[in-house]
Image (cartoon, rainbow, N blue to C red; front, side):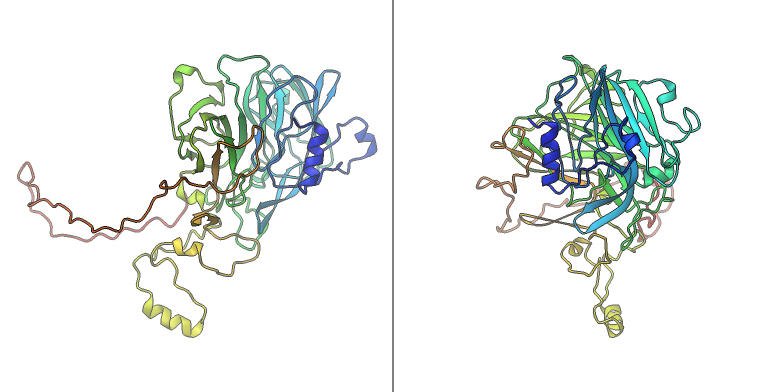
Length: 470
């Protein structure tokens, strides 16, 4: 069990800065104490010590916002502000977020809770907060100009409503949305059921994270806000592999994953070694008759999905977006395909001018994961992550599900690499290869061709160089 006091203590021990924001003492007398968190580590679950009880979630590389009870109302304080986010060791981005981080802290409440959220704007322009997926009074929906005036810089607005239905939700600005979301302003919201729900199972571990994306040039610190599709950093909670924490489970735990998508494209999220069921969507828990086993679920823009499975298979299992470009770090999209191109003559000429020139991409891109190339400041290799058998050759939206039989309940620490039982690792075949069986003759068309057959033409195919159309 982790009390609120323990949470603050743990956050401080892990290097996080937990402190009051610099608002006036007059405002502080009425506002809940704002809590900030700057550590990129995954924080332990915040077990409620006031209000209705619930089984808390764990936010991947994030945390849950503490609250105070005020005459039966659960009060939170969000501070919209510029933040520094370590996206992975070696790269920090200048983003906008809430309470010291991007994404902002997860808000956890219970079905039927009356909630009051104070939002202080410390950005250079007005903002608002839209409570994505909630049923609430129209004037609390957070669309600037439609439901409310924008929250001016330096001001604090109050949102108040009842959390009417259990489920997985998000929050984000609905003011200058293109800029503010491109800068990282978003957060997760979980409403737990008030009572035992026929469609909501008790789980042993409940993880949540947001899919988000950025366009930050190598050597730069601030995202390009005009990018519509051609992003180069695909992230989970604004973290990139190998900086994304693993999802840890005890063997035979029932695990729930809650994922929201606030990027500009869909993401087929794929888990190795286990089948899961989609138990919840934007609209709430799915009927049991509509659930079936999956290993991949496609999450569209603006959607939320809940997946559940029994962690029955021990090991370190890959968990990633199945769009292969989304498991790469800072990519150069305009690099031509060089597979099969003979560089030898060109390399000789170039090395007379640039002695350190290296051939790249002639046999594929895997060599890049092992090259010790100098990189611009504040960027990451495209493919990285050192595993027990060498480079994992991944980046971006990739992590691992680590299942261990001896992982203690409630222990979310990384257990290290899996120790494979003897005889269970793929191995090289060293015997003699058999000659392939081939057909003695080509097949014949079922009908005579009406036109004369054209001579054989060799086609050359080039992949599109753009990144549009995701």
